[in-house]
Length: 67
Image (cartoon, rainbow, N blue to C red; front, top):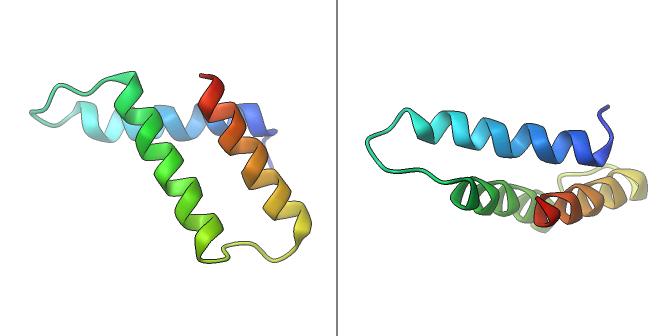
């Protein structure tokens, strides 16, 4: 598993890559918002099996916010 900073970078880059191929003018800020929505949804629906994963997802969210 990537550390939280690496996972944050990976998620934002994936969001950017998906949307940069569209006709819209995608920005890094928009990509960050998409990644944050993804993490928030994972936390909301309980997409974790134990406290370690829950903590990890929160750390990833913090790292995304720092980008």
